Image 1 (cartoon, one colour):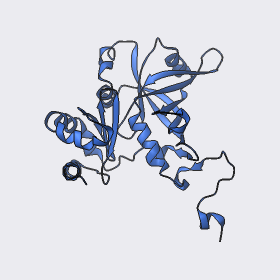
Image 2 (cartoon, one colour; image 1 turned 180 degrees about the vertical axis):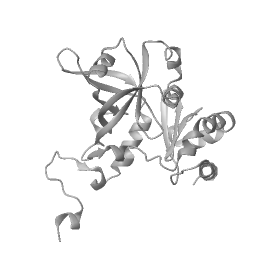
Image 3 (cartoon, helix red, strand yellow; image 1 turned 90 degrees about the horizontal axis):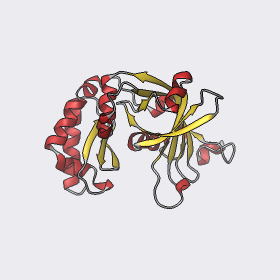
Image 4 (spheres, rainbow, N blue to C red; image 1 turned 30 degrees about the horizontal axis):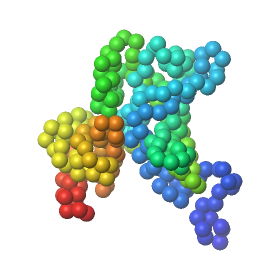
Length: 256
């Protein structure tokens, strides 16, 4: 019997991360959770003059499939860098008390591209409503980071690499859910604030506001806090979404 058959996957070296599918922890779930819940991160680009790495702080949202989204000004060095060299990376780190290196963080590498997709604008401004003050300025534009890979450090002895398909959701068959997202979000915020508080109870008291829905879960904010809440099972249409939300609220009220 091979060693990995007896005790699970074995690292070849002390610093070598596991492929996500072989990791002895939920690397894909942890990575997707960071993608959805971290509202700002470090953007690393290649400087236009000498190609040196250039890191800056940016605010982040996600598209329905988890693609990282940014609103950037052409007056910023990182935007000029991206227009010349689209290759870049984003560091997602939620942080917390104590040693910052003890908390999970995710680096996503890929290529950034400008996008005028109305859904991108809507999802970004739902997560960062104050950005609407300057989102329409002619020197600002929305960018999507098309991932090529991810590197997750989940804390001590928890490292994994991820492919683009492991980072992002497959939206095939969920087109109606994506199309109906804006209406569902508006309805939940207007009429079901109590349910949103139940969903996000583990993240603390609200009031909580829903910013986005996707086949895997929902994104909520309360002031500077964020919460990612997963459904019991993935949903692909509005009917399944309604049933899941009703069941989740009922279970929360019953303390289950």
